Image 1 (tube, rainbow, N blue to C red):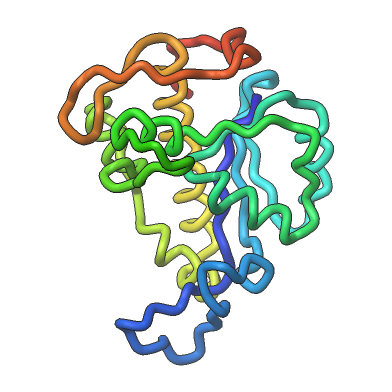
Image 2 (tube, rainbow, N blue to C red):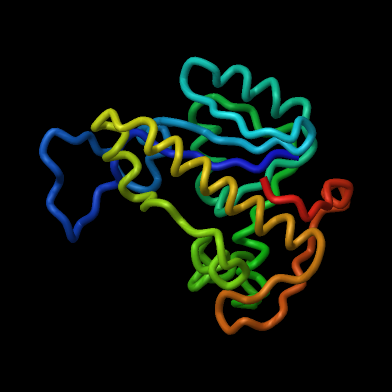
Length: 203
């Protein structure tokens, strides 16, 4: 099983804000090819290690994906998966588990296929469940930092998001979690293949 998160190169345009001079933008939230991938960070349960993938070693990530059964992300079905596919990564042979989507289904139940993600962000979920895990930056600014050649900060931010997602996932697999909305107990469904990775160890 892999836990992963992606960051992008180009900024997303915001109609409420003037473009930043000398900074490149994609066409919008649907322009996954134009966003470009800056870094993908991964935690691999089999090898018990974090890994960093960029343009020079994306082929190694593809090989790793082919060897694993489940890929876990946070808003990954709506964003990260589409970004990866737009840049040639084959995700067709692995199962996908979107932790944000599963939490949102419990917090904001609906008859619609996709529930509202309101109040279900990674920061809110971790704040409701841990005292020592929090965001170390703003994802919207990651492309700006990347274009300013502050690569280390972007990699560090991406790795921390993977750490946060893994911590939540470990709690989901072993017990209930607290709702980011009202603190109530939530039981989140997981895939059968994920049950072999139950662990309380946070790395």
